Image (cartoon, rainbow, N blue to C red):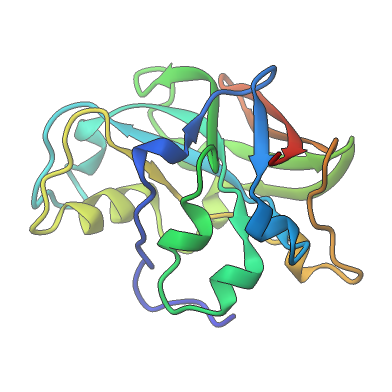
Length: 197
C-alpha cells in the first residue's frame, strides 16, 4: 500500500487485550475459515495522564512507558472493509507485554529495535526510527480533539514483513508461536496460537 499522508487510526475494544504466553491467542472461526490470521510486530506507547490537544514537542511528556504488541489481524475481513476495527478487534487480538519499560529509561523511543519471529524464523526486523510517523507525531495526532485517558495504549505500526505480503503468504495457524522482540529494555512478547473451538 502507499504510505499514508497522515496516521491511519482505528480502535480496538478492551476485549481485544490479551496476556502473553502461556495464555493462548485464539484464531476466531471466521478468520480460520479464510486462513488469513496474520501478525504485526508493534511498539506500544502507554499514556501516563489525560492527554488532549498536545503538540509534538510536548507529546513525550504524556508517555508513561513502552511495551510490545502483536496486532493480530484477520486479513480477509480487513481487505473487505474500509474500517479495520472488526478485522483487528476480535477477542484476544492484542496481546501485549512482557514488561512496561519506563519512558525515563527510554527517553528516545526511536532508538529501539523491533523484530518479529514466527516459529523461530525472523519475519520482521527494523529500527523504530523507520516508522512512517514518529512517536511524538502519533501521540499528538491521536490527542487532537480527543482526550486520551491515562492508561490508553497506542500501537505505532508494523515494519515490512507481515504474512500477507510474503510470497508464499505466511499466515498463522493452530500451534504456531510468534515472538515480538523490542530491545533494549522491553524484551520478548511470545504468543502461541490456537483455533477457536
